[in-house]
Length: 334
Image 1 (tube, rainbow, N blue to C red):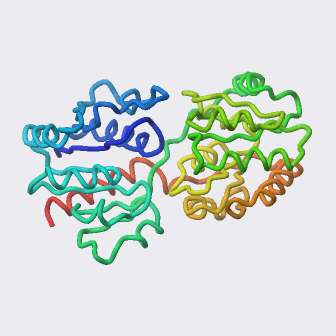
Image 2: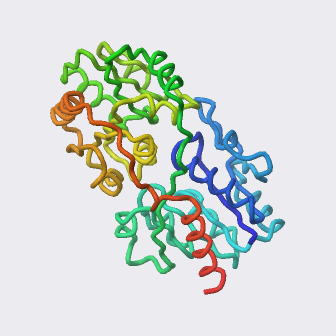
Image 3: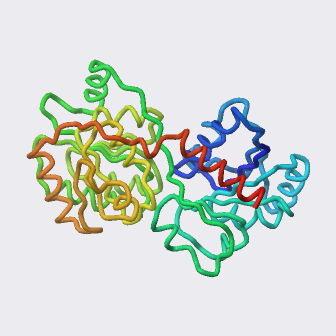
């Protein structure tokens, strides 16, 4: 199959990670071309290009003529299907693809003007599928995102990481991983950590973003900001608890990352948390409720919940790739 993948965003966060893993996997068995914006690197120096396998073919589209460059690339490549990611690519690709079917994955919420012209929608959660407008006339598939189990560290490696993060013997290590923007709610986590008054706990904030300087100024004692880390997946194995204080989280790969490491999770009741975490180790608290979050932190430290093996089989990559490719075929041969 000849497949064009398209994402027109900057930086490297959840959607970009998904696309990089999708392209890397599909390129092993299909002929794949990835369309990006030429300026895909954000202010932090992050770009999806850095996570692509060396053999992946990439076309960088430059504004304001990216529609013309995209049209030329599609005509030259002659794909069987085009797969857009996010609203911007969802709007542009149907205008360029001609008779080639276009699928789109929703990475946030359904917006009719962004997806009305694609032939098929992939919804990664039930709430996304329920939010698709009745005016949409294409096909809709409900396909989970995936998670690939991370390597297990030796106890000595975990001990070195904990030492690096300032966790002495008996220290309870609370971790957050994410982009430091207002919607992630780190300001509420800092205040909850302050109110919880945990004398033998330390909070580690992994990630970077425009809010970092302000958050560091507001942080109480016992908080470490690490910045962006390529080894963030390793750090979960050094934490004792993962916390997601987000005001909005459409899916939340961080939940799967934490659960894969056996961590209990405290999270606000976002759509993503409510889709993944019920029945899993941890606790859900109301959105923007600092008092409830502080109380949950106190309970977690008091109980020191053990790590638990969790079955994440429904999120295996091979199964989800097969579902995506089967959906392509329904669009190619309706």
